[in-house]
Structures are given as structure tokens and as C-alpha cells.
Length: 403
Image 1: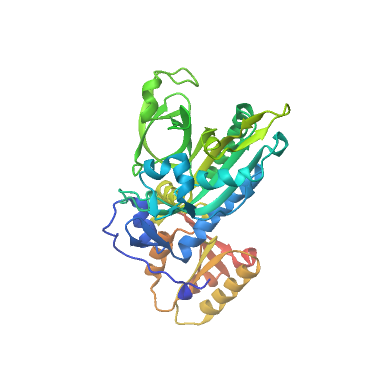
Image 2: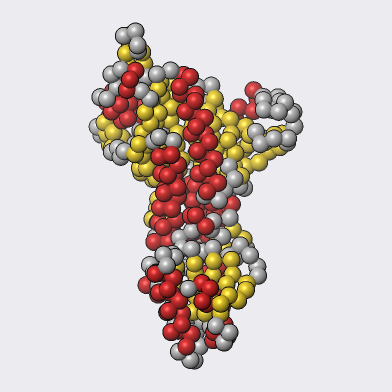
């Protein structure tokens, strides 16, 4: 992609609407644009990152047997009335006879009923990556809390609690893989199960921008959300009694639903003895924009974003430094086409009317993992200047070794 053709604009000043670091950097670097309170447009750079995150999540869900579907964002009022959430769900967007789905239990449960008849039909696992809507009152933290957002939700369907528990642990391991691939350290955090069960688990990333208070064990990696800390004087994992507090942002959660949403829709199966039993369910969510913000909160420096390689919008940022002679321009063009031909995702700063200092500053702000600089100086030795975004030092590398 030539930067002269890229739809974006960087800002020198931080937006006034928020003090959240991730929102400031993503807006200044031209990844997102705020449309309204809790509403964001993803510009080409931001959309590429979002799709990279989506691809990682999809791969790991398929690896644990998930089958991808797509459900409507609008759900019938009658379904929400069956579960009692038409009145009790305080952030539900209502449109006369429909709800804009903040979650999809009210749609997937009656859908599963059309397929499940016998124990032979179980277990199975369905997931989607779909837009969700929640009428949040507090939307001042950028992508960390919005009214419209992209979410991966996986639902599992089982014969009994034992089968659910086994799959629950499989999802838990897959979540660690997802967050590690995205470049963040996550903590599987014990939290309230709400109306579903006594406890659930959240996946938290530590950041001062987080709204949750976590208690972390001083000896191991066990973490507890503040709302359940009163139940634990000692760490249940290592018996340590010392905890320390941190702020965190929830990027994912896993729940054992049991028969909470099976019973209202009479989602049942016949066991080996011909007796009807309710299907046992689990649900597992990840908010993609929130994860994107957490990645930035976790990966930045004083100059801008430092994208992890797997989620970066491009692998390489190629900068052509303007010179009176045409040699650097011609050589930069050749390198750009060579990198493209090799399958390397490259953003090529081909702009003629921008100073070297501005190019370097903007490149650091955008945060692509590797920067290649072509100038008359480097070409004297038939080299490129190569610098990793996360490193301070640069080095000269022979052009032939890269292209």
C-alpha cells in the first residue's frame, strides 16, 4: 500500500473526548474515528488490525471444534420475554417488537432446539463474530467501553456437567493462546457468575485504564476480581495469603450457563434410556475492539504504538527519504514491488512533500513492527537502514539479502 493513497490522517494533539491512552494513540495515528458517544469507525489501518485479531480468534475456535455461523443482530421480543431479560437487561436497545442483541442466548437456544433430539446429537460448539449493541451509560474510555462493538461468542451444548467442564477447560486454554498471539499477557480471573453460576472466569489485561480491580496472588498467577475477593482469604491455588491490587480491563469471559437458557425454550434431548433431559450450555465471549485497545495499552512507548507482529496492519514500513537525485526514488520503488511480490505486507511512504523528520515521527506513531529506510546515504553501500519498532538501534542491511 502506498501511503500517499492511504485513507488516514495523523493528529499532533490528543483528542479532548478521552484521557484513555489507547484511544488517544489510535485516534492520533489514524486507526479509528469517533462518530458519537461510544461509536467508532475503523479506518483502513484500524480495520486491518481488527481483521488480524478476528483471524487469530477464528483459527483458535476452529482448533477446538467450533463451527462458525452468523445470527441476526435483531432478536424477537418474545424470545427476550421468555428469559425475562426484556425488562431486566438494563442496557438492552429495544425497537418495538425487537431487541438489538447485546448477546445471543435468546437466538441460539431456539436454533439449537431445531437440531437436537437425542444424546447422539451432542456435544457441538457454535461460534460467530458479530456486532453487538449495549446502551452503556459510561462511554468515555474509547474502545474499552462502547455502545456498538464486534464480539466473538461461542456457545457449547452438552449432555451433562462433566462434559461441559471438560470443554470449558479446553476453551480456557485456547483463550490463553489467543491473547498471547495478540501480544498481551492475560490473567484468568475468578469472577462472579451472576445468575448463571456461583463463579465464572474473566480474562483480564493489566492497565491503569481498566475499570476492574483485581487481586493477584503474590506467589502464583491466580487472580480474583474484587467483587468475589471476600470469599477468599487465601489463594486456592497455592494457599498464599498475600495479594496485591492491580487495575485491569476484561477482554474475554467464559460462563457455565447450565440449563439457564435451555429451560425457557425447552431445549431438551433424550438420553440412552429415552428420558428427556435439558441440554447443558456454556458461553465464551471476546470483545474484539476492546482487545485491540488492550493491545495498545500493553504495547506502546512515548513515541506511539508498538504493534505485535501478528496483529500489525503491515509487517514493514518502507520510507523513502527525499533527495535531489532520482536514484533513491527509483530504488525504493523497486524494493516496494519486490517486497509485494514476495508476499510481504508493506506500507510504502512514497510521499514527496513530507520531510524526513515528519516521516520518522509518523512511522513511530503508527507503530509497524519493522521500518526500512531508503536514502542516498544507504544506497552508497547498496544497503537499507533497518529498525525494529521495539528496538532503539538500527542497522544497515544489504538490499540483496532482503529483496
